[in-house]
Image (tube, rainbow, N blue to C red; front, side, top):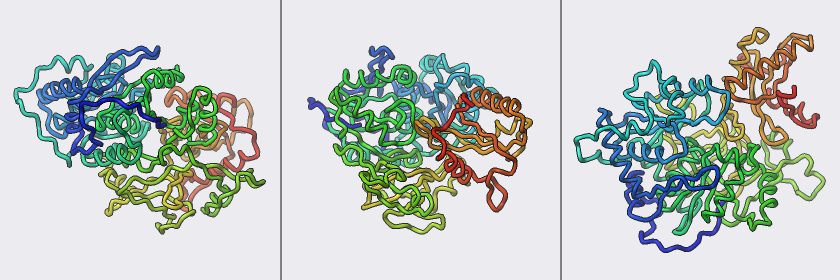
Length: 561
């Protein structure tokens, strides 16, 4: 959301992210009086960190990291908690010529094994040289790093106590060097590290600041998003520094326990910009649903909230962050689309919301116009470019598209061609240059802001004796409160008590290993659809499930199965 800024006096001339590197952006912001503030779940301020102090700390820490004998381009893994340590280490890497790799700070209970496995794969995949975590997360990190060749795994304080390097001059900041690696998935088996270079990051920051959110002096950001999330990192760590504006943080776990504190602190700090994935607006649902935004605006209207403050946008880590933004002060624009035509013929037929045909339509929120310098095409399965009001896979090209996945050339070639066109894997359509997202082609399951690869779920199901290899398929399907995870398992067991026992075992296993609630449906052998080559088709299984679901009142959960 984007509110009107309060005019303030600034001693520093405003620059709209027109810098060559992230370090250069901090150098300039440090000349002013703005910075970052960290709040507790009770709403009290815990730490104030001016950009001036951040730069001093980061430069000093950069020399300490170089004293470890690290070389330019070496990776530094950071468990990305919402605290000043992360900012210091992230920018220390910028000054030292090192590459920070934010790692998730798990907020899920009962998932020790999956979290350690996830950290282990991320450490190994990034070939990290050192790893940093607070005392609370350090045991997980130490367990995950066992057997890996890391120079140092420790809490921030241990690094602060290191001696500084003898050299007084830090490496020159190169706009073509890697700024950071952003892992895109919560998967434990298939982590993909998006490589973002300095010039790539700065191009997106400039687009967001100048054209997307249109920040001005007097703006102030507020965020509860995790720093390992692309929106949390780029939108609320890098953007404020690049625009020399202050930012206030609430830990993600505190937000989850006290979501109203988000609104209380926005009021207290007079923040003008705060973003969140859809589930943040009703604390429960994923997928950008107009009903969620309508209810949020209605509920907060008595407190003075103006629905025109909503700013719908579209972005992804593979494009650094922002791709398209709706116009400011216009609220969210929706279209009622005939779902039969959309899903069966890939045609966008707009319906009249006031007519009797509304029952067979679905409302989609428009995501605005792509940032300047970005090209967007909608293509069909054959790669043909489609026209307006035709649904297909979104492809884009622009200055902030990633250079690839870290040391994964095959995966990179699968989504990024030699001409720089990125296959986003998302489904949508264009009309008069404006983009609307209607679904996703890729298998990745996104539940309440968390990314899960279906293979992880299916592999766990196949560990049970009743489930044969290739006998389970997982996907996301619409539920009463947004997308829900669904697992369909072929099973020839007919006795009700044994079927119930299998569902109970799978439910416990998914909770224990992935901290995931999933609707589990047992189906007959040879029921699941397959491709011509014999592989399971998640897309067709999902469509079958949705069609069956149409006759049911709501999606049941595994807990009630």
